[in-house]
Image (tube, rainbow, N blue to C red; front, side):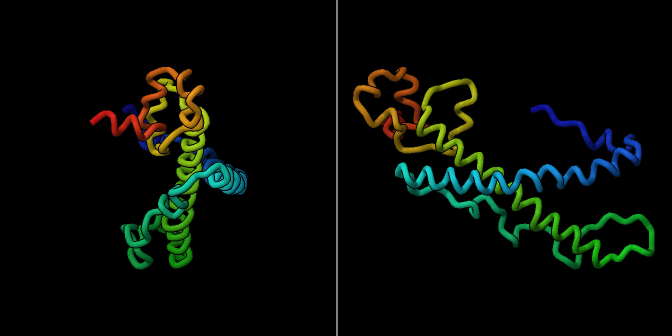
Length: 173
């Protein structure tokens, strides 16, 4: 898989670009996270109301606190050599970012994608070239597998896809 180039290019960026770029870490997330939280709640309610059970929780996507490599006393901090930096405050800043903000935000977006995959597998069990990536949201049966008339109209690959038809998985054996 090709890598995104960022590290080998970072040091060549002018200071003004870095100064502008740092707040852009937070602005998009501050503006999107409330809407993603609302979307997650609505999607989750939708899935439960249409019969969804055994749906993972948000906390299944959050890394365990003890799995983080650094603690307060050994947290890596960026040093400039300036003695006026309050190292305790800076250490707290990095702990906030690395132990709370980043893992919780990444978990939120991953959880949102997981729920959307379930919705997609339920309502739209029709194959395309990226559909295998939806296996994280595998379901027992899609909406289209519940009715004999609709099931007969499905393409054989859609009818027998184990991502949205658990019977296809058991028939493989």
